[in-house]
Image (cartoon, rainbow, N blue to C red; front, side, top):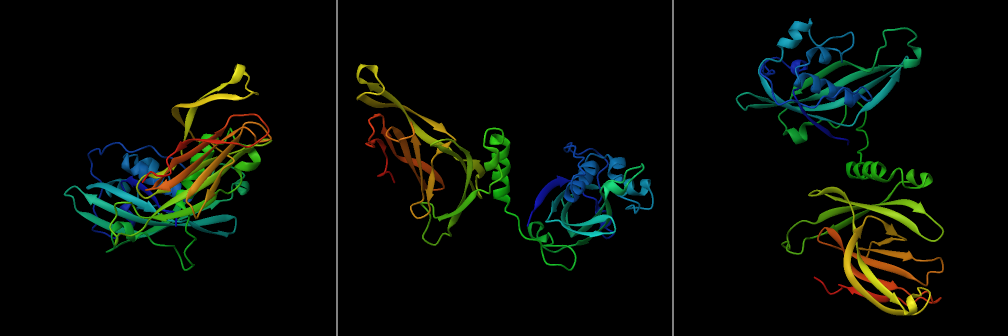
Length: 350
């Protein structure tokens, strides 16, 4: 289920009487949100307007059926509430005679000026009239048709309805996957091959216990997302994201040694004279990579030329919620043979 949390002052006039209402004095200014691109975006826009005391804007998100007998009554309905948190669930829709009707599950936690809290839950119905059949102004955008919120005895985190109407609940959306996908496209959308951008990532679940966890402690889970980005003649580059319930979703960074490589007679095609690690650096790119689900390792293999006789490769082991470098090999000789040397070895680290 898609669950979007939006801290705002709620539209409580859809709830039963006796509820708290909005304080007349200004609360800390909420973000300005005016978005009609989706049904849940309209709901968040409504709450943004009310939280900012922009009641004319809030009134405008409703269609012909208004939430109060007149605008003054609508405004007066918000005297007294301090703040409201609003959570929206997965939106369902159905078409009918040139329109699409959307149902949005909603849960609200209203806090009054004395600190008292009330929970309300229910559904909003919104309508979007097909723009192609609207031949003359005024244009009718997506708008709220009705809403019904009732008091709930559940905790706020559990009050959100799983669906609206009589149909089955909509399929749950993978919030971590969506976050990783958005981050990948925002950062690398202009750098990756277009034919690869549309591909779904490989997704892995890693179950583990922290090294200091008690034997009775439950397992934790880290998600691993592998996005293919570009493919050249002999190297393929990928981007990885990991996510958990503590740190959220973040891009995985790979530690690599910085090498000082000297060749006899300064001829890079000749014999290697010396090779030393002089530092470390990180990169978000993984070349010719693979994740081993049994060993919990990501391996990389960067060919310095097509035949692969000169290369660098790393092994990254998952430990305690993250991947760390445990081995790095370098083959610096362009001699037609694969003879890498291990320059970093942390395999015995705890």
